[in-house]
Length: 326
Image (cartoon, rainbow, N blue to C red):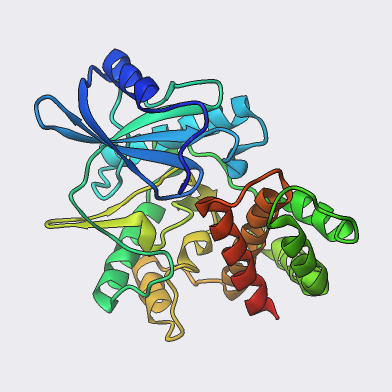
């Protein structure tokens, strides 16, 4: 997140770290990255470094629509990541560091929960960059290993084949003829939705048609967002981060993000697993991602807001996505 969280700061962070993890922070640095979470680099008096993450329970729509449900889902996701690393032996999984009491998440406030991760010294990718061929083969190998883990190893939730914020998008499509007074980007967003509404509706219809088929496919443990921004390349390893989207789903939930026009990645995956990749499932998850991105931007820009780095980014994202639709 480009903006800092509302209602919590370094004081709340350092108190929780000392009380629950016995980490006595002497230095914290805010990292304006990611979405739905807020991140700090923390250094203690022994020069050890940690990565502290405050998750916003109001901004994890894929886990639920109220804070208790989201907190339960997030806790289960962290338990899954911990089990994948420590029980299934997937060393590329970056899982939370338990607190002194064994908790993977602790509350910071009614809205935020805190997790602590090892600090990885390395380089991360960007969401929209094209990984090298070597990195793509390494990613396919990771997904082969992840998808082979029996679901019984970890408490994995099923991922419904839906667009979680669909009501937000449907409301915007119904109400684009009325003023949106939320903030500086509300009326421009309304005009954009109004001009592209028919194309959005057709995309939603395509999603529904594909979902009827894909629902019947077998499920595996998937990461959910294995794009370059969720990888960190250290001197010795490639690590996969951000496991709050982990869940049982068809393997194409992960594979659509690594597939290129050549199809070579999918062929390698099929040869390694004996599974035939389903083109309808790949298409469905591409459409789902697009619809969810539109919904996220619309939700933010219809609500009361000011011009900030976060809202500017949402407006740019909405323009880019709907521009591609046109």
